[in-house]
Image 1 (cartoon, rainbow, N blue to C red):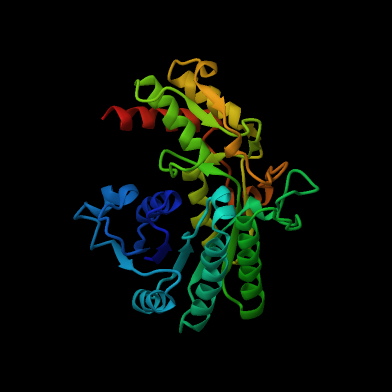
Image 2: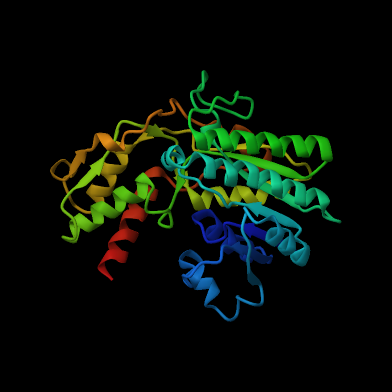
Length: 326
């Protein structure tokens, strides 16, 4: 029975991954930051279950910018697998807080690699990289061999962390994997992400709690998948006999406008009556042609997405209707 440690356990991916690992019979330890709020929101249903919490699920206070606390947890738990999901993951926000983005995403990952290297029995490491490392790629779709050309602070920090994971695998023999992930969403997505913002606004307008939705560039296109699909690959990557890097993507492009139309249609609304553009929401540099080729993941892991883009947006919108109506 494997023991897994998850940083960022209360995030979207962390919560779905926790559920998956528990289904596989793992004991799960999560790293959380000490705050004044007691709610764990996305894992509250597990945290409040006496049959799970304290028996197969445990939470520990630590922080990526406090190496002593994280090292203490690693030594206490002695995990077989580490899923390093914590970090500042909002691309637009990284322009506002570039230093803290790089500190947590880049240096936080390097510090963790050093800690794992010093363990008596180094754990397997999963690192979530991002399609933002490709930035403005010359080829489309992108695969594991596409050169890094980030165009924002988040992508730059992820490129550093991704390369460090590969270096520690090659140089020190660590079982360390990068998943180069394209956008993936769910009803548990943070409210500052455009997918959740649109679905929530459509629901609020339907319920008479909001009148309009302000957006930036709705022609922007992304390769969007579902978080539940992606976390399956996280676990599969660490069960392989050899550590490697994999692109996780749907291989399909959809625009922000597509999200708008599906979300508002799900609510029985005409988006044209409610959606307006706000120039303040336009990003300084927008990555182009980010489309993933997950052929290697399909060939080696047997992984491919199961949830369609339309089903994803409809699920997110219905979840918002339920939340806002309660």
